[in-house]
Image (cartoon, rainbow, N blue to C red; front, side, top):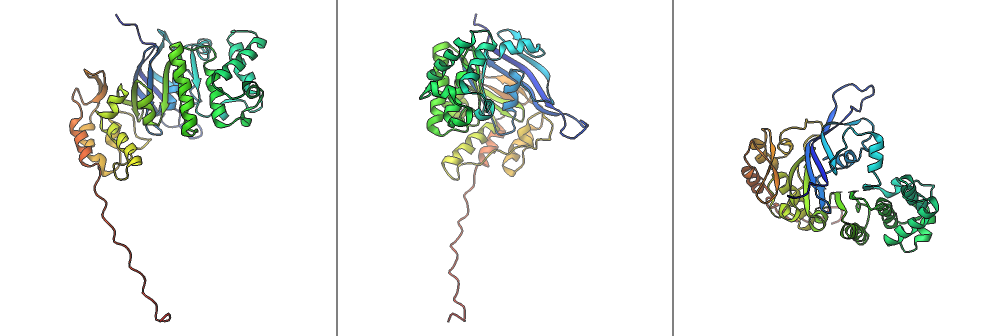
Length: 360
């Protein structure tokens, strides 16, 4: 009998309060019916376009939703313990000690006037791992482990005195201080150049390899998801439309939206190979297949079969995809392929302007 997953998310729904003053109007659904599983020591990438709900999902996992947001439905179980509705004391014990978080903006994550070493040490002191004196020494060790060139000098510096790559490594050092069982990373490489991004990803991979830490990465980078993660979950308009082994999902997408994402990435590499996905209006309700409500003629082939309600089904290959009352979406996928791209008409060069009579 296989062990239970480290993290189990079932039917998670999150909504935001209306932005208008006074709080009138209906709440906006951001996540609906999200299901995820992550094994101990496994890697999972959550990908999707901006506004799909990726960062909201990560914040909900550790109880860090912003003001006005709330969990409306579902369950989040970590090591068998329910986190939805848990007390702040329970969440504080989980955060930092058992669950580490690498935020997207390291400059905003650190206090601008407190030395980096002091802030890394606070993570250890807050959970009673060691005394303040020992925590300062441990902080320098963590910074050295995360490959900062001069860890002692970096510990004395404040955030703006470090480069972007150094700040991100210091943030990783703070997240792994307690050797967490689960590491959540929200766009950990979005502000870094490719060389520094590879270094940060190598740090996360080394932590997973040496300590068996499970890794959940939120990212826009499909190449990162395919090359660095074992499994992927594609999020669209607050719903997981397809899950499975990362390489298999991107090589043979089962959902038309995932096909569009792959085509969009190819468009960046080969002009004319594809176009970005068509996003639905953020004000439209979360329900059924949101991809069917996207704008543009290329999405019309997916609209008719996707209008009805959909649910998830596990395939024999371990991939989960959205289906239509038990039926898959081959017709919609073929329709999207037929509308992939058309040759761009060749525009003849403009004729040279005639000389004016005055010039003659």
